[in-house]
Length: 196
Image 1: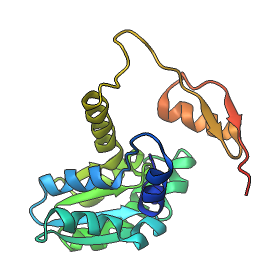
Image 2: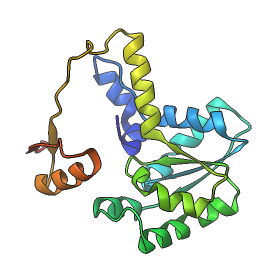
Image 3: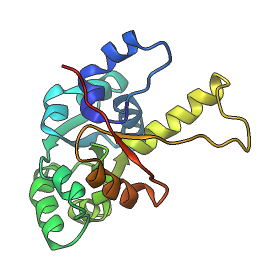
Image 4: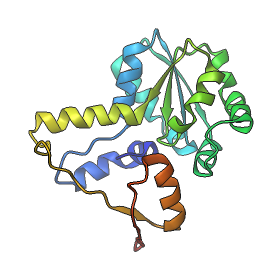
């Protein structure tokens, strides 16, 4: 589940409904932060992810000595989706949101939204060189690779998979952004409507 909010709020239900192993982004991100911190972990995410308390719970389960401080950063997602990944506006927003975490002297910062790594340069400048940035999506990819190997489910060498893209709204806008994020291999995006 490549979304921190969905992982935080719905992962147990998704796992119960699925017939295959389902990996969320919370646990891999928390494990990576616990491995590098000296005891102070900052967490940034959407309002819902922060409000869920999923990262502090996961970190406490790993080590009672880790102190956490969480901060919602609601403007980060629209900045990424508008293609504003760096520059003076992004730097100003990052500095404003991250000032309390910098003041708390966190030594690791979990980027608790899969949009946020696109803002890494501005986030790194705002936090300074002593803070390790933890990309929960990268950690989840590593976990997925490990699980596929463990379950002997990796694709045979030389065999390529195929990618299909679906959007619930504005497929052409989604395609433009996906091409910027994933490269020119993003083809047709199919519109999908969800029944209520």
